[in-house]
Length: 195
Length: 195
DNA sequence: GTCTATAGGTAGATAGAC
DNA sequence: GTCTATCTACCTATAGAC
Image (cartoon, rainbow over all chains, first blue to last red; front, side, top):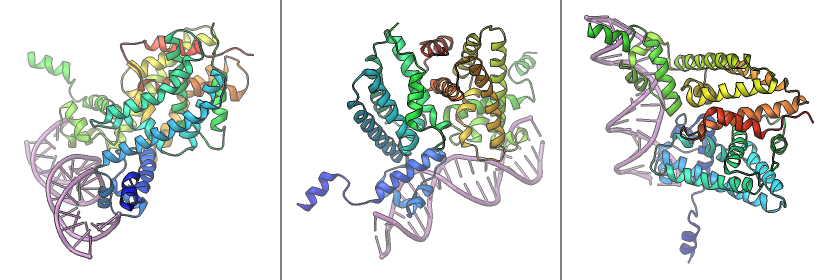
């Protein structure tokens, strides 16, 4: 009975699994995957490197887990943010705000999703790329709903917006504009009329 | 006779320093600084790892040299591109085209400038950041010349444009739009009026 | 200028004690 | 679940022969 519940919850005890994920996200974000050692991550949570392998099969597996958790979080946040908005433009604005909040002040998971993907050398890489593409589908649809015209124009707009947002960690300063102000500033500069 | 020509063509003698720079740029671009070993770079030019140290003091020094060369090239290209344009908008367009051409089809140096800077752990890092900021000053001035108004609006526009451009290697496909078409597409989506 | 050989260190991962 | 100990492999960098 008790055991059954534990199985259903998937990861019942072992709190350090989550601590390891957090530490890995932080380290991968700060120094990159190749610049981070298992010993670094282990010491952040107060255990020895060998003990990580009780929770994760390999270093790659750890990166994949961080990546999947990052996708899960940002997808959830952005999906939730757009339901309360009424017009297509407001929905896009809400999505941009949520996306920027997550990658600028939401933690390290999102930045790992954004930056460390190209480094993964693993058969499962494709699955991660697919997951990220599925996330970006949200923006693809929001932009299509703007009704600005051709397919190619929609692609260009998507690349413009996503690029500007995903690059923002490179210059963002928490003393300056807030993620929300940045999102609004970007959107105001963009021509979203149908002509 | 044949042998002499082969030597002249492939390795202009002694100038393996340039070959090493090229190989390092390619490797750093593809696998990142931490994901590249001196053996990788050496084998690309047909020498052994230890021999690199005749040309460069250290691996960091090699990255710095790639970075400086990258800055030098893109600054030169963009500076040249804007002199033939007449209006502020055309100058910005010319700069964007040159920038995108260099990072998308110009080689690996520019991409190293863009992506590998945060990883450098060296006192000389500041010098490189300054160099990149000086390069970006070109765009800062071009945008100011548009006369779109407030300082903050100019910053937002700069971040929007630079972010979209610098992110483009993540999705660029040489079978699709050309760098020039991408630049024009981006600019057309942006409101550059003074109101 | 490039080689060989190697120093000295750190990486990811495993085995078995507790 | 975490430890210690260790394996194997690879890393940057140096020294000296050629």
